Length: 210
Image (tube, rainbow, N blue to C red; front, top):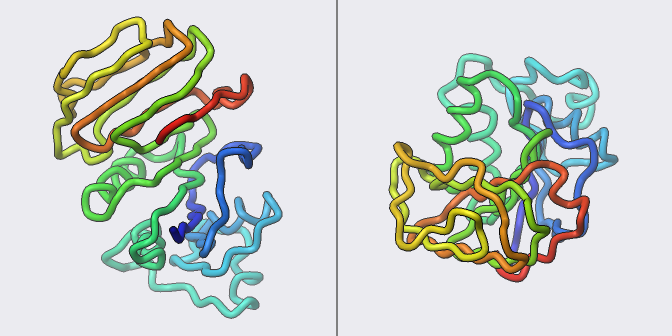
């Protein structure tokens, strides 16, 4: 299945976990997401946005990409989602920045769809209805609906505070739970964003189903 990789503004990890990242049919950078892609030695196929925060504006224009007007209806991230079309995608960036930008990103998950994998400076997030993994005991985990306008009925095994058909929603998220048993499984009626701290890949977890 075709998959896109999208770089956006906001904080991103220092290193990409290539062991969980696949091959991409299209690499898209939105505004200062171009700077992040360049730092990783990645050359995007598409660069878009109003170019108000990139430090490489001249370089981007020299590559043949034009800045769109700053006064526009869509955020740079939404422009990137539209460029991805119907493809699934992974997302790099978007962390530890302006609150309104973060809300805008989460809002886009309602109108379009959430990424399969989302990496910020502090967060590793997987999007899944059925997640199985072999994880180190004590690993911190949180999860909430990928579309915050929906509630999800969630059952888990392997956590300190397991759920059995519990409703997770904007009014009740599972915050700072912990892995109690190495084998963890999460089953949900709706797609969840399942969050781990950025050191998640340090202990080489085994993702069995996502």
